[in-house]
Image 1 (cartoon, rainbow, N blue to C red):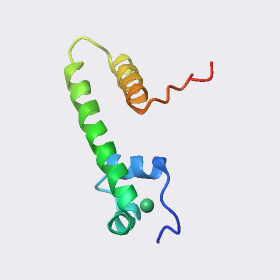
Image 2: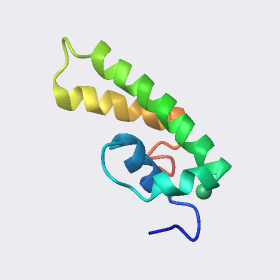
Image 3: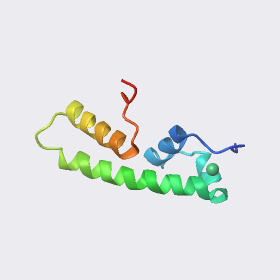
Image 4: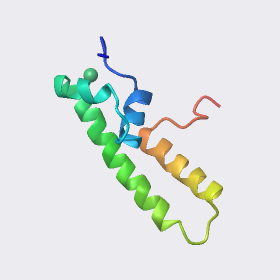
Length: 85
Ligand SMILES: [Zn+2]
């Protein structure tokens, strides 16, 4: 399977989140500088979020931690879920 166009952000997210799963994104990346750059920044973001999960692993329950991670991810992307509110 090949992408006629670039994969969506969700597809790139999936690829970064589950690198062990076979994914057509892997075949697209060598051909597309733009998507390589996008994956690089997603990887950097993932690294920060992983750090954040570890840093908050002590006192907070999982739901609360994921909430904080989500907030930070949205802040990093500049696209808060309730931006229109
Ligand atoms: Zn692309």
